[in-house]
Image (cartoon, rainbow, N blue to C red; front, side, top):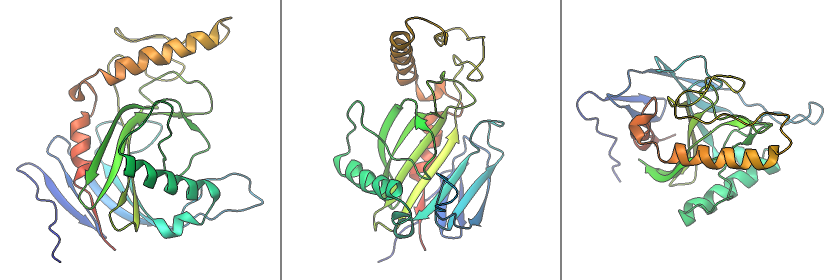
Length: 247
């Protein structure tokens, strides 16, 4: 069977890097390169650490945002090697298969993110199921923290997680994203016009105020058009949807 590769439109650039094929859309001027990342295996004496098998990693030089919590990365993990590393990674793979079969997310449902981080997803906004060239996945906006963090431009990122149709590879695309109404960092005191201030830590009604804060922020994020983010979400979607993975 002959499988076609993505065909770039004028202004787009097709890259084929060690079996990771994708199109950088004309809306972004990126210079990608690929490297092989060695495995980090569980160590019972080191406590909870991020673990992952050897994998391919694409870095994007020239990304329009810099100095953010996460650098822009595309990682391709072999599912079979990842599944046996820990209960968490096995559970994440099982959950993703279930989620992609349902093609729906109920309020409060989890979306797996690999590699696993010792932090929780504070919220999930702009959730959308979409296929890539030889697989399927889901994209959303979130940030990771160990506390009820403010929605901010340093920590906010676009995540696309998916599995190839043959079940062999997990695709993890993580790209920083900004919005004009968000404060710059989690502890910023200045909130731009259109944004909402994070509740004060010492407030006697903190729990209720946090619930209302995240309700309002999710409304704001979910009702922002693609072009209202930097980079635009449809531009990032075009990159994610063009991905094709081979051995």
